[in-house]
Length: 238
Image (tube, rainbow, N blue to C red; front, side, top):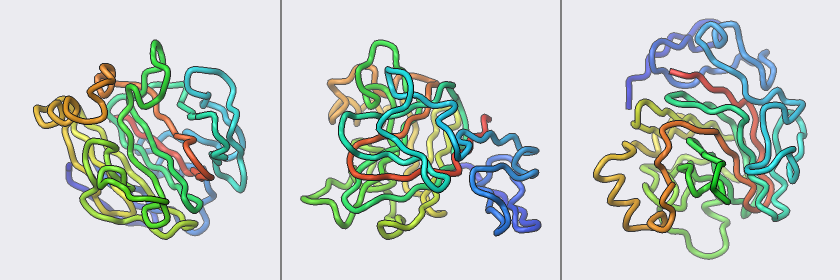
């Protein structure tokens, strides 16, 4: 991972180079950008009030989701209503806060390509979100929260208990990817490397030829089972 450089001033971490998340001041409203964030090039992807900038994967207007208390809520009612951004991104930092209900299962996707693909995971790698302790039945290590799903198990367990808010950061820099959860690095890998290709060819994705091939794409949030909340979604292109 690249170095994190933080300078704290007035409760806000000023970003220099490849830095970690900006800390909100107590007075900063949800789903807003502070002056320092705007100056550092961050962009807000959810305004806290509408589905503007998002659509259901492979379809149109958003269904199967709600907006409540400043959060996007995956209702987990079945039907696979995963949502993606209207815009594509390449080489970026993504910040997002989330919490899950008991036995919930979800994920955050990147480099998603819709054209010619029926499901979101056919192309986009996934930062896994799941109820690690309450999930019925066993979990493989690569299924646990913070993992690069079906590729790299998490380096550490850092999720807060069900019902509490977590803070995720995903960094993508020319194929080098880092997953962070509540300030702890949970994955560090390089796409398209020999190690990546070996894992891809030997596991779940061997039957998905488009998986992990795109150099850029849309960001996605999964509606896979039970309620999951997302807020303060921010991206900064490198």
